[in-house]
Amino acid sequence: MDGGKAVMSEKTEISIWFFCGILMLAYGVVLIATGIMEFNHPPANEVLLPFLKELHPTLWWGVFLTAVGGFYSVVFRPGKQ
Image 1 (cartoon, rainbow, N blue to C red):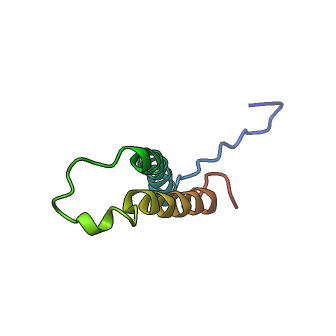
Image 2: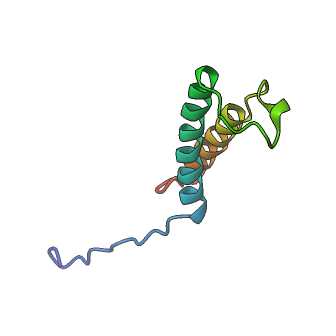
């Protein structure tokens, strides 16, 4: 006690969506890096969907995950009121 005043400690809960946003952001950054590397060194296994090679799905999926993860991380960040 400080001079007769009780110190109130606030317990704040961290949203699960914040953690999901951080995870999506991290995966998105990794996929963007992988997608950029695939421009010069395309993957060896083109058996499954060879027509996707020109579309660069790894890069676009990384951009999407980074954008959504960044949005969730900002909107649901701890301490935001």
